[in-house]
Image 1: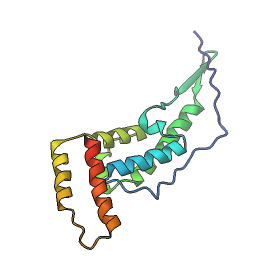
Image 2: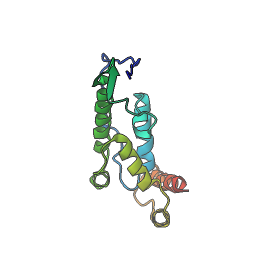
Image 3: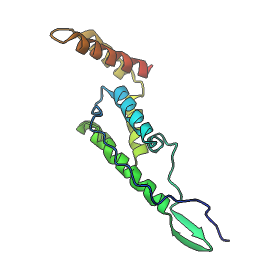
Image 4: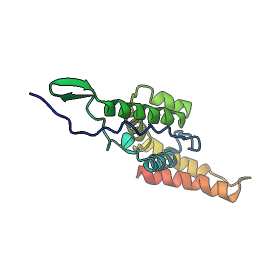
Length: 160
């Protein structure tokens, strides 16, 4: 039985190399800020589907008149995902990079980081509460002081 692909493959558009140099490096304490920055940037390039799972790779092969050939759209999708994967790694602290060392796709990185830092745990909530209690204005500017408070409040809100 012959399968025909009616897919139109755009071989003229190029891959997008995403500059994430202005993204805050992900640490164990700033997941919410990092996530918002990354998702907004990828949305702007229409590539957020690579990390949130709404975009899946096309079939690896095409069959036309009983002839199977490599699907150029698949190869392009995989290459774009590797560029996103590499850019994401560049936005992570070394300790977070170690956490995602077994991942192979940008969606796997996204899921691993989210399940680690967006998942409420009693210990993490307690740690954030202790950090809030210990934050002092000291010689910080009012902006720096308020930012440190806001960051911890946002993290607590994210954890429920």
